[in-house]
Amino acid sequence: MKGNKDVIPACTVTQPTSVVFQPPFQTIEQAAKTLGVSNYYLRQLKTDKRLPGFEVGNKYYVDVTSLWEQLHALSERGTDTIE
Image 1 (cartoon, rainbow, N blue to C red):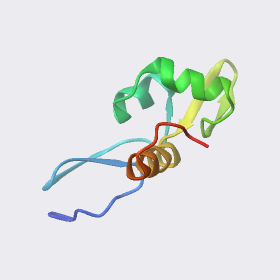
Image 2 (tube, rainbow, N blue to C red):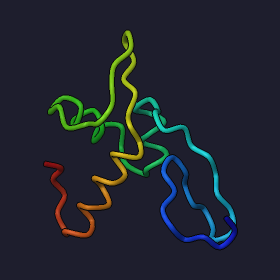
Image 3 (cartoon, rainbow, N blue to C red):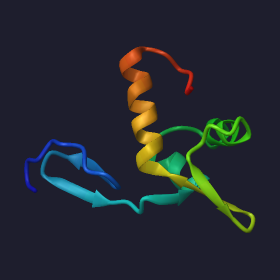
Image 4 (cartoon, rainbow, N blue to C red):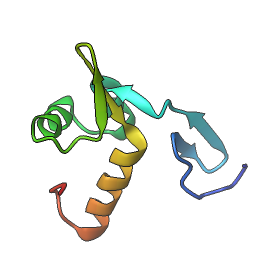
């Protein structure tokens, strides 16, 4: 996988030659850190029922791959609203 610049689900490319594994489902706090967005933003998406994931007990697990795809699509469209 060295030098592979394709998007790899559940992974974060930190440099062209290294890949750091990230679990596909993370808590809101972990997902915010992984994706470089605020906890507040993710919690607002959850309140609006636009955050991909599921709840177990009192914890919400974010589908990081799906959310990354949504955020990536937003950046390509030049908008900041997830539909």
